[in-house]
Length: 568
Image 1 (tube, one colour):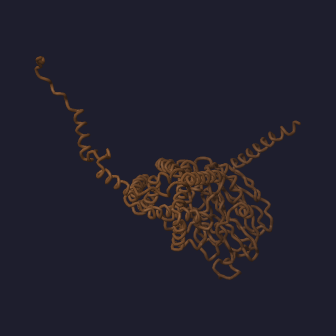
Image 2 (cartoon, helix red, strand yellow):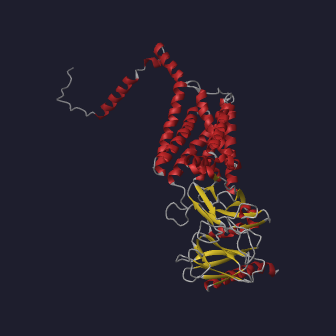
């Protein structure tokens, strides 16, 4: 009975011993590697680590060695004294070693360019003469053969680019020419598949990254775990745009495939959080501004009220919809035309939204035209419906890269909603209240906790604000948090719609025209002298009387003169 209890402890001790051995070897300047085996290594600036792999089989022609770290750069090179043409520095870097005849040992050197120690993971993969060579036709970057993926990001989009691959060849042979022709015997037959992999949501830890990088390093693992977003031919540009997801870890990799031999090779995977882990301001841990939290929390409180009581409180409903329309329009104008800061734009957006809501309510009070009000409500719901459709994989189709095609399709789908419900405006208003009001709660949750559902509307706003965003792939993760929040959204929307349908089924569809009621009451008070309200003084006289009463309160009492008793 003692063996089951002793076994976990033995495994723990064995793991600590193995980890200590790896760290001791690396600190001594030597790291022994095996093909396809990951090794953690602790790097520093003073002592470079020599990574060695021995007993390489004769059928191996190329070895890709790569090293990854969480946030600090690592330098890898072929020589102890690194140069720009024989080394690379970054958090995800790799080198390609073209083996000579009879060569059975490969050596690389690892070092931290910073003074602090860096925990990284290293691995090497072998390929044969029929496998394509990633980066074999590099003409842009420093390395002669560059298997790396170069990544740039901002808050809007993330861009990756890589060097074209070349055909494989035997040891000692000359590499195939990169520009000798475009036939099936040249590199132009190669195909590139770009894969994406999402790290667990709200997890920015080093352990999670290093563990999940193993799922995106070799060909079989990438195809099993990654999401293939796009396939490129050799005559297409080897750069791809993606929608940025600040605070969400993403790993990208490229698989180059030779259709003639049905062989493949993987580039060096690259990761990003679309934000800085080390910056003192606006880092990954402080992405959500206080102004955003205040704005969307207030917006969500009103939206929750609209979700359950919007149709009954008709003027509040109109104010809410007018706020959305005017706020969206003016935020786009402020962001595109001016160079104001985000906080100032948000404040001006709130002011514009208040004005828009009041204008829509004032229009209803004066003219009482239901169809025009419902057209605005229907367009809000229609635009949201179109955003949901393009949030699905349908939005990544190549045909929608064209702005004209996208906006015509988007507008037609948005106009379908008010057209379909033109005969039942009350149903349209209740649906808009339940769906839009409940979604405002999701936006408020996104200010405190990452959720991909916020990108339903955020991707539309990005496309309006950024001309290059039309080329970005907008795939997002859908994990446990998103499933829970989607369930909450669905319950709120369905609950709000059902409550309002049940409450309003025996009521009139819309309240009467406010201005006509006010005018009728005014005429009645004028003509009917028996009505007590007829004897109420005009508004100007009532204000004057109130001001006179207030003045009397602050008037000092005049001193009385000599008093004499009254004569009886």
